[in-house]
Amino acid sequence: MNINFTKSNDGLVPVIIQNYLNNQVLMLGYMNEEAFNKTQKLGKVTFYSRSKNRLWTKGEESGNFLEVKSIAIDCDNDTVLIKAKPFGPTCHTGSTTCFKEISNRGFVYELEQTINDRIDFGDNKESYTYKLFNKGINKVAQKVGEEAVEIVIEAKDNNSDLFLGEAADLMYHYLILLKAKGFKLEDVENVLKTRENAPRRACN
Image 1 (cartoon, rainbow, N blue to C red):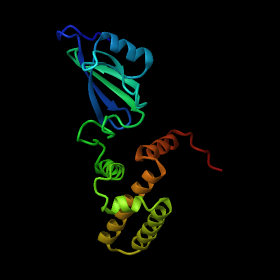
Image 2 (image 1 turned 120 degrees about the horizontal axis):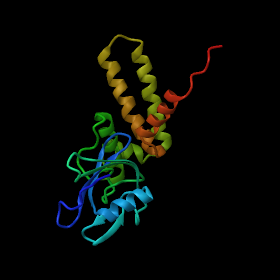
Image 3 (image 1 turned 90 degrees about the horizontal axis):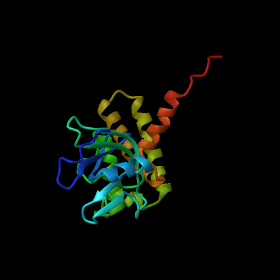
Image 4 (image 1 turned 180 degrees about the vertical axis):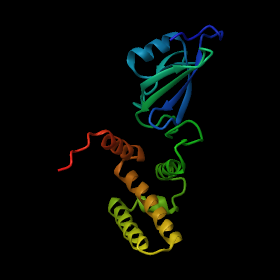
């Protein structure tokens, strides 16, 4: 890749990091030529830290590495876009992303992050989400079961508003259950992808 590291006096180019699964922008960093070469060699995103004045592999202290999946450069050859698989939160605050925008995959993914943040940071311990989660896995699973039964009941009637309301309740509690089990929507999505790509069984 013909990256122009000479456009800036310090020899650095901006590097945008995206989640390779959902294109969520995770962070912005800077690389010099040495950092870029090390990134390619290790397969882990390595920046040049302007505060530390040295190469810095993301996750070298926290373990929250960024595994490189693809690298692209812009039309001016002075900005790098890396799609990566994050291991743990990317932001030093413990958040998935350093930016306020959660994801371009839609509201459900934003809701998932809101639920996770509310539970992880406990900024509102009186919230229903926080209280339910801290009652334990059995209570969370019970609520999902209750909501599943209710949506089945509403599916047999013709009241669209009630059906959609129960569908929303089920989705909301399902996201809390995923959190309680230590999984994310992406994990479920990956399972579905493997099924989609799996060879179809011949009909008997």
